[in-house]
Image 1 (cartoon, rainbow over the protein chains, first blue to last red):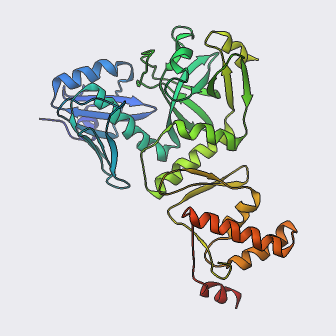
Image 2: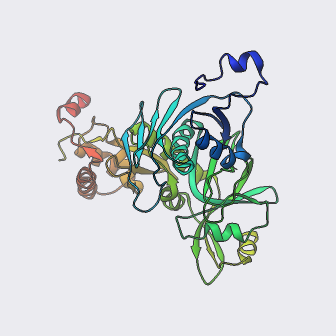
Image 3: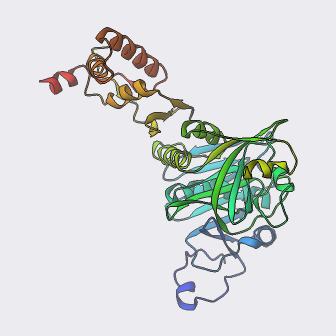
Length: 280
Length: 99
């Protein structure tokens, strides 16, 4: 039987007991999730995929995952829509469903780890809103203990940046997670990888700067004012909600990051010289 | 239009960035940015003041000719109503607030 609890009972009494085999606990951006599924193959694939993001603490957000027909994840030709928003948010992706309740979620019709991955991104984008966080199409690279976040949609150069960065320095090459914690912005590694297939690291690093990628013959980092920063960031934010309250939360989060984090338009050549530009 | 009290669409999310208003429209999630005077008008559009009253406040705040302020206010209100960001409010509200 699938373990459907949210931590009460099993964790309270043991604290160290391993979760049942039908449960996978992970943590992304300090959001602990408990995936519960009867599909051994799917859960096994998820264990491999999220190996660096396993979590042993108290699970706070249970997700029941039910298998279904195989469908492709986000990409060309994929049908995705928000069916309802607000309390009872639900999202449909090529026949797979995310249904979000007040304290738990259900994924139905999950045919592959890729669909699971896509639904997890949508779920996280919702769970992050009250935590002053958001997901951004961006590669994040750590240098000297500070995170440089390189944003842009497909083809902008995120994977190129990741491939030009030292081994072990890439927090993610596709989807970055930013949160405002204890008075500063942090970039978190995520397991959502792109072409470079950086598996991500489950750690957080203070943000040094956010760079909107512009491939160019010259190399320069052009600081932008807050309103321009909003213009550059918003199209790259993963956002699925539709209620006024959710839009308001996101708008205030993005306005805050635009006003408080250094944001640049980075004109760069696809070689390691971009680090000199940033350092300069 | 100047005798009705425009009111912000309650479905529109908005905030200020560097002192000026930015709005996300409810239907298409498009970002709209207002300049300083447009931001002033937006903030007064609470459904309690007519367009004419807002124009008078604008003229006083920015020390511009009343006719200019009225024209600018009318144009902006019409523009934002066209985008469904402002809604026409009842004219009676201002009569009460002015009383």
